[in-house]
Amino acid sequence: RKAEKDEMTEVPVFDKGYSPTRLELEKALIESSVAVVARLRNALEAGDVIRKRQPSVWLAYLISHESHHRGQIMLALKQNGYTLSDEQKWGPWERWFKD
Image 1 (cartoon, rainbow, N blue to C red):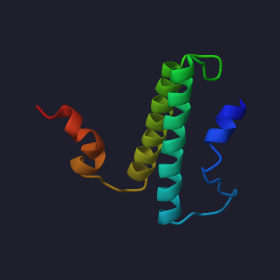
Image 2 (image 1 turned 90 degrees about the vertical axis):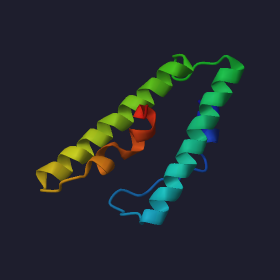
Image 3 (image 1 turned 180 degrees about the horizontal axis):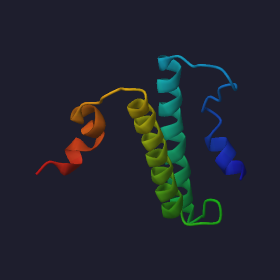
Image 4 (image 1 turned 60 degrees about the vertical axis):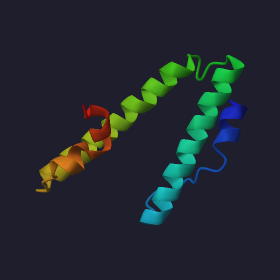
């Protein structure tokens, strides 16, 4: 547990009700990704587990969790009358599907 906390020390935590700026969000996401990579790397190199499971299971959980939030965002936009272009909807994955 301590190692997990050590790897997360640089990740900002925003107070409840606070609306971070775009720059603060970008910085937090970058720092979070660095911490996740460090946690995975450390666990894999040490042959350790994360939350009683193999590191690959934790990574799969994180991907699933992010997908859930993406779905929430897409639904909120749709319910509020926003139409996204295909590029906006699929842009992050476009390079994976190119022939």
